[in-house]
Length: 351
Image (cartoon, rainbow, N blue to C red):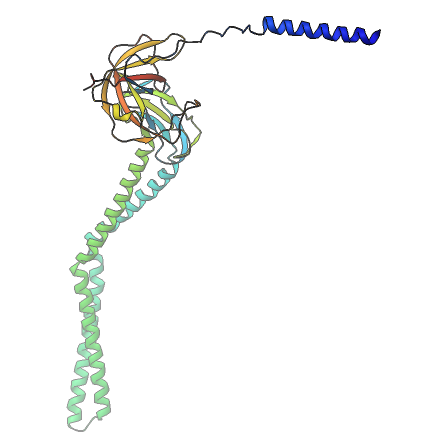
């Protein structure tokens, strides 16, 4: 009896399951509405591209001229800056020490120049003149002695050896006298012109080194390259800034007007026409379209670097950049770096 009851219950359960699947299996849960209306190309024949908002000057990345310690950041995000305005300062202590040494070297060179130009020193003349007089006296004495001995030799009152010895002493005394006169004349002549030229060159080199240090010191005060607004600040006082391998210390841009840089796939690039009409669509819950005016088509195709992670996206393609300006004010607030959708008319109406 239990066996038949089990079979009957199994059959009833299977029938109920088949009924439930047959009656409710076709019911599908409703699809949720999209968070935002999709972008639709407004042109019958148009090019769709990804665009990015940028400042009129482009977003200028301001980097430090060399790796070093940042001692002061003089601006905040959103500050208006003018061209040449200091933005931040680097540690200059090592260069200041070099400047002190160079200033000392310049003073030494100037003192050497002054000394050379002041020659001859009048206090040095009397000793040399005395040396000349003494050498002349010794020469005259040796000369007279030799002449007397020569006359004695003529009478055979002096040996030939003694006469030769006195002649040698006379010649030596004459050489000493000429040397003393030459030294006196050299001192009276003053500084040799070539020595002055060398001294002037050394002074010029030291002054050039000082100017180079001042330029390096000035370079360590980072200044704004344009009139614009500080868009981003990535460095703080006390931070060691590198010249590569990290984000720029500051980003500055001219926000007086905004541009849109659209990246057109190389497959669509042949359809581009100068002056073609274009439309921007702001992404988000509140979608907005804004008319654009084409500024230029940049003729260099570049590898695609902006990825949007769509299944059909290709990373081995190249893009042509097209720059637009807003033909009318946008109701939504646009930010440099913001991604938007750009549609470009590729119909016969393009120029």
